[in-house]
Amino acid sequence: MRALARVVAIMLGVALAGCSSNGCGVYRYELAGEPTEAQLVAALKAESPQARAIAARGLGAMGPSARAAAPALREALHDTDEGVRREAAAALKLIEGEPTGKP
Image (cartoon, rainbow, N blue to C red):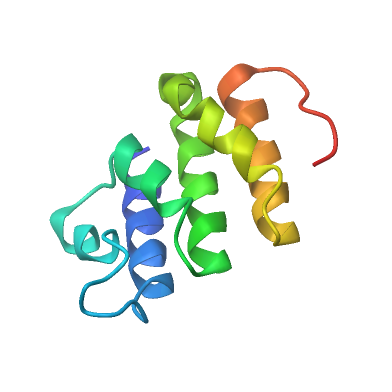
């Protein structure tokens, strides 16, 4: 699990590297280690669709321990990007252990 969390942190850092200096507030955490649930939930609002999808995937990897992120993931089911919607649906299934239906 720690290795996966580190991969998610690196991918998220790369996806958000284009943020401005006042930033989206997430990419700086890549160097600090594993992203927290709160950091990944914040990344669901990032400008980059790739970053939003990676954040959803990271939350899904946390499994049921990320249950508090479910409302943000349900909101992501309505994202403008299909990849984000797909990752949010998959994350909800991993977190809640039940089908979420098509996004």
